[in-house]
Length: 107
Image (cartoon, rainbow, N blue to C red; front, side, top):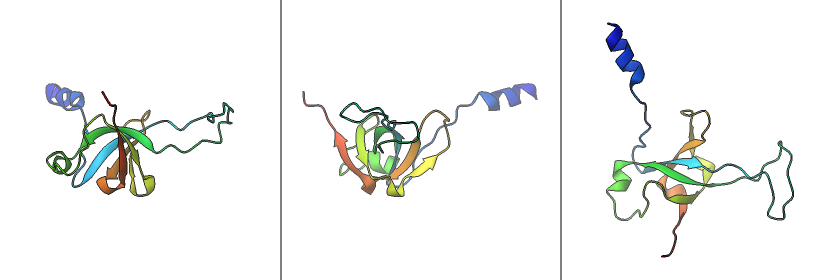
């Protein structure tokens, strides 16, 4: 019986988006302006960029969506659903239509 309980607690939990959605880890909000002005803790410049953590199977199998895990993206947070999964990370399930740009490095 103790082995079964131990096996259940050692299992790792994951989040997999469903439908036309991706899971994004939002970048931290900036505490300094481009001009170098330090902002108080109560004021933040909203950032709507992040890294794709997971892609739904539907998006992954559709060539019309050129987005993959670990891509840096710009997204509209209006329909983003926050995921209370990791206390130190800001994870959001985002509809693919709210991902407005993918940052690519040119080789």
